[in-house]
Length: 508
Image (cartoon, rainbow, N blue to C red; front, top):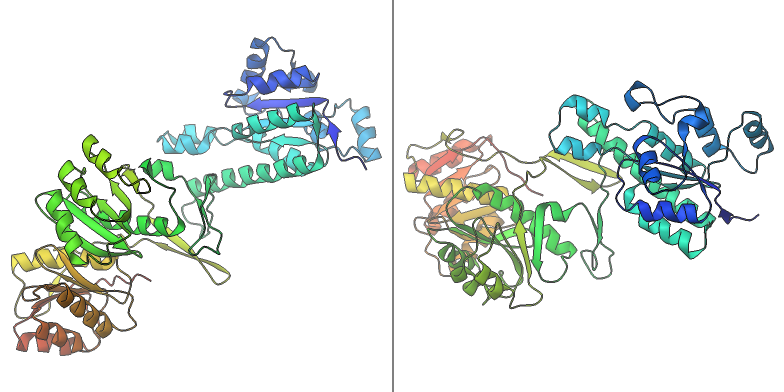
């Protein structure tokens, strides 16, 4: 059976006309009969190319304000007819239905209309009915029909037509059919997610994909599905890797906690903050963040909540780091940072981050709301007789914000709004605390006057006792253990202050 076909007719009905003209001209050059509707028909006529109005084919005008134009047996019969089926061909002849070999459709911009904050009525009118039906019909009948389902495919189809003088292979038709169903499923998911208020269902779809150098390790393939350009302007450096993106995600979510604060700088490694400080100048915030763990900072991801100036860039340039992120850069500072050719430099745009997250697990997907709750003075409960000083309270909330974004089990130690150590991803809270104390001592931090944050409650008083012996006198934790009183009693007996937040911040 000959699977290569030369098209004789095409139906074109698109919203976006950009880049369409060369394709239409090529169809005309190949003597392919063109059917069209409304604005597309006018566009083709303005190119001085002959076009048959769909109304002439169906004997019906466009009705209901343009809602019904192509929904007719003479259109869909021509698309869905099987060219190797004798009964189908007889019916085409009986009802005077022409075969349609190519369908070129570009859907109404539903997602863009939603994003622009249009009224519900305007959004509903951007739910394409005829277009999506044409796409599905043409893609279903890929054995005989070629389907172009997006303006992003115009140039590729033009190349196919040009290369083989209008001859289209079965493999090409099948490949574009798959693209068509990708377009239709993405479109339907966007509509569902807009309308859905109560149905418990998981529908996510991304049209944009980036091929990464590799996955978590060189032997693994890796891809990113999503629009990085919507969140970042990339100014310099190599392409982001799979591991870079995980660290960048952690960095962006962490710095969000300090978005409107005084200069704050964070350094992350393997999704955890290894340095974070808040100071009157960004340069000092960076220096003190680096002091928290100058060893782990090597090859890390750096992020600032303020524009990076020359003084800060000069300090950063001394460190080998993979990625630098900031809301903006002084021009001279940018030139300094570009001094390392592979250093990735990103501007983070001010857009709203997703409020939900999901990940694969077993043979399905885990889905949840993000941990969007930040501990502050409105939620705390003083559990001990001694209350924290104002300075300690500021450090406790500072530590709690970091703790929320650190892998469990975790303990975070802070002093003077500087992360001085953390225990991350440990199988016991005691191990996390001992790790953080050992680390703080290694970097010569004085723990007297430091505060401690825990992501979950203490089942026993051992953690407050260890902290006390290290010089830590103020603690923030969720509370809720059946043995809370044991920790409270120890704190009261040793002049420690402890506050309960009532909110656990596990991060797995």
